[in-house]
Image (cartoon, rainbow, N blue to C red):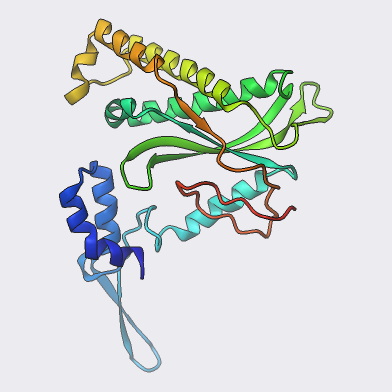
Length: 266
């Protein structure tokens, strides 16, 4: 059973019962039609025996399990080369769903702020001598959907379980099984993100339309941002620290259920 078969069998009924953003609809339809007559095809002929073979075109969507495999493998190979022979922690920074409507109208800006503020938060905690006092290594990967295909904007990160000292001459290791306190990370992340969002609005970089149109008024926007300050934001570490993958170990594409860390060391 392939994902395309599931989508072909139940995709239409699912879309009838649920509201999906245009990108989600495009991806589902691309997977449904991948390598079918709907996308056209080409004929291959053996120059020895003359046998004909019809091959249907692929959708080339990066979310399709059958497509973009080589690009994925090149990306994973490059990431493996960056890994250090140290334990790594899995950290997830999640935007509250109250930002979903604004993110739909300003995806590039809000996703960029998510990357920057998540990285700044981790680097700030790493430099703090209370925790490590050095420079940590970070790789972040964006996810905009949850397992139920609803909008759920978050970044998964792998963070080195040690830091390069400020002098650059030795490694500073974490305490056993502990990186940073997640509640403190969440508070700092919330402050950095909303501060950056307010600066973007003041600079006129945000677009307001549809349900977010009233936020174009500075007073309404300020009051709305204040409501986001009053809610706890989510930063989680869903996995125990794991050894760095070996060069021969196969890293998979990250999934919403967590980063698939290896069970053995380098």
